[in-house]
Length: 125
Image 1 (cartoon, one colour):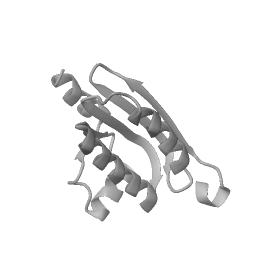
Image 2 (cartoon, rainbow, N blue to C red):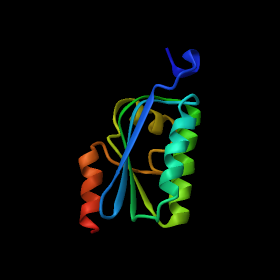
Image 3 (cartoon, rainbow, N blue to C red):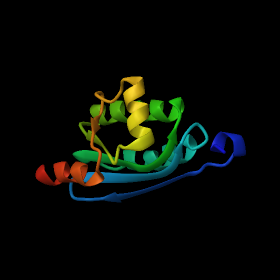
Image 4 (cartoon, helix red, strand yellow):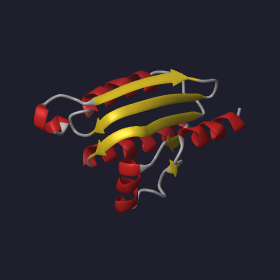
């Protein structure tokens, strides 16, 4: 049952800092019910001085609706305005299908494995 049906968010968001990147790990459903939690977490990131990279680890996202996808587009635009490079890591399963079906696969820098995205950040240090 989705978070919209239960009224509870089923998304967990945690983040960490590296020298030139902020890494945000999402676990659960990225849907309209989870957006308040996700946006609150992101606001703390936007309040920080910009880093070269923002890496979203999507490997544990089990569902993404249009509102979740819209938030990813908003994040991409915000990153562009800050001079931050957005990398989506762990894009497989649900997220790979959603990005492919919507035609947004090529709008983002997408990596099937989180480690591959993190290697990009390390190479730019």
